[in-house]
Length: 287
Image (cartoon, one colour):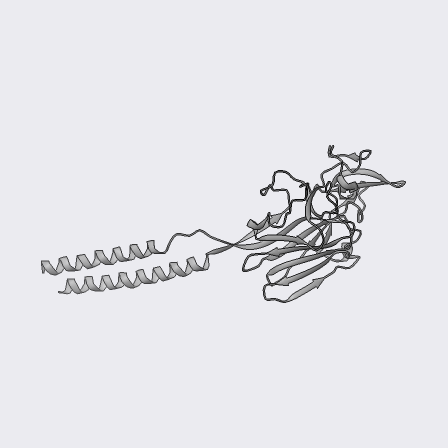
């Protein structure tokens, strides 16, 4: 009976260890059901529409919903505008863009180019932005609304997002747009940067310049605004006092992982217990 008793103790140990393993595996899997994912929305991806920029007034509100983002405007529809354009018919694009900027919006042109405004040549050097988001002014070709308005970004994930960056095109100074955040806990915060933020605020980066290397702050200018909240964001409202465009958004969201079912671990456990029990009975019979 000594052998039988020893085998019984082994079986009990296997059961105990196996149970612990299943608990540990289950806990680890529960903790890793989600992973943090960096998301960049630059409006260039085809997301279920025939062509970009959109014409004829189709709504963009839910086209990026698979990334946990829905959008709206306080005034008119949101459209996409192709900023990789030649500023005017008589203007110059050093990037080889041949399509002329629509709606008389040469101030939304990106890349390297120049055009005459009054008696003055504007020579810009701005990173190419491709499609950018605008509030559409009319029912014709894409044309940003001179009267401005509010663009709302709703983050639809239950856990919200950590919001990181936004790129804004064609603003005279960094203090013009106003940012209103609604957090997951229901609290809100409204931010507006100083007019000298290009120089004295590390969270605002001017990305555009003139041909001679000097800062380009007005027409065709591009800025990156950085945010570092400790709380998750559910909504962002941007108030635009006049024309302008959103060139990109960057945020971090939680995404569900695909993980194996924990029942496979239980099967292994019960299989091991069954084997130990069978050995015990066999030894008892021999004795």
